[in-house]
Image (cartoon, rainbow, N blue to C red):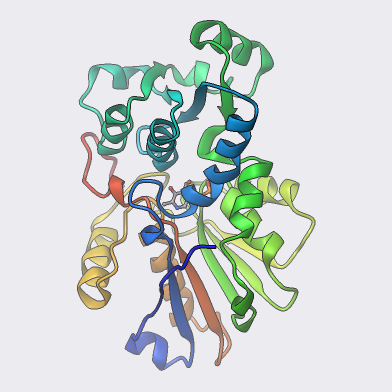
Length: 293
Ligand SMILES: Cc1ncc(COP(=O)(O)O)c(C=O)c1O
């Protein structure tokens, strides 16, 4: 079991609503396999080792923290790794800081068109990839699968029953599903989607039978990896006030959402919130071609 720092946020806007916010700093769990990635990858790598695989293959976009963490974990545990990356045009551009990290960890980056990428779950496409990249242990996009969900259950600990609400950022839904599965009946699990649209609710509903959760999809600043001046100012202010680093794709949007909900009296007085800082800080550098709204 890993010791994780839980940090209280002493903010006037929170105090006056009689709400408390504690941030679990999973970003500090490991310098490269940070945040939720540590929990999502743990059982997958153990399974790959147990089954005697030598190659790991996974999918992601230019800003996929999952790809960077998988590349590092593969190198660390002695696997070769391949990343199937969405967007063939990226092959001719400078790499994002996230993909640079992955490449430095020895991951072979293979850029494919969006059309090809959409086939990421189709057996015939996966068979083609096996021919191209030899027998491999497949970890799906974002790392979300039953073993990842099993790992993410371990984010919550025994004493966490004191919290009324658990908050996390949502990309593919594995992290929130683990949290939901580990939550108690009196707790609400709230997700903050990093993607445009409301489809994540349906996807998570396929992964759990429990109903004590919800996903907000109006804090993504226009879409995945999109930023605006208010978001970047929020990150600067938050870091200056609490000395907690955030990144712009997931954690900053989640915290903006939480503070907005507190402001709007969404949480009853006395509510205790546990907020999961899911890491991804290697993606903080503003990469080339970053999209703004
Ligand atoms: C920093 C960060 N937070 C949250 C998430 C979302 O996790 P999930 O894809 O399990 O919903 C990701 C993606 O893995 C991430 O990199």
